[in-house]
Image 1 (tube, one colour):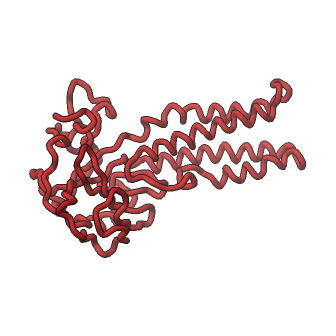
Image 2 (cartoon, helix red, strand yellow):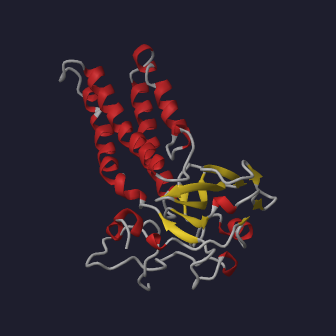
Image 3 (cartoon, one colour):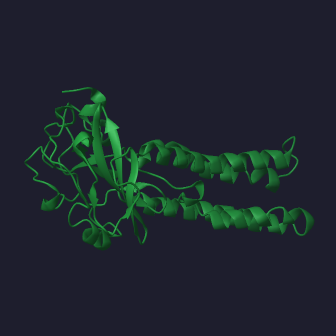
Length: 283
């Protein structure tokens, strides 16, 4: 059956969805769309693309996200009730930094843990504009008017609320990418659809081609696992997080359907390594 880390590399670990008793995840979970027939015979183990489910994003974010609003509210107390702490400004600033760190750092770590993800810290689903506006206004309350401090604080609160809304939108589609085995010893120059921007004409570990979309991009990349080589296709949201590009209700479903009606890359007909294949439950 292979090592535990390989057994569930494609289907996903049953514990992610609370599946117990030795049951396996279904071949298609709710909302997942089967690949078009041009992507390979679903009954065959040769030359077939398969969905690789990635760990649900909420796993690493629920606890820090639950505490972030608490610290943002708490940072206002030293300023609303001055003189109750040894240094009101320092305490307020510390609580403020903790509140936003509980959003930004877990988001960055979660994105970095996803294969095929990318982007800068500014592409995270955070309302940076209102956060920056509040940061600029806040120091002015010392020199001009104390009420400006509360105006800036309202910017921070609204920014956090809007950030949660942006995250909800970004995470509405679960993370997954699509992989196919390759024998790079038999690969010459690979044929990739001409609409893609080619980054490498040969198989490499890392990005090989990219196709921009209205709200993100599709990326073809190479990766290796347990001594086997693969070609991967992933949709990367503009926030840098990976989303399943064959999923019901995807915001870019129409554009993706056109771009992915057939595999964008022609591969040799390689057998799937048995270490990665498991029988799966029907939905």
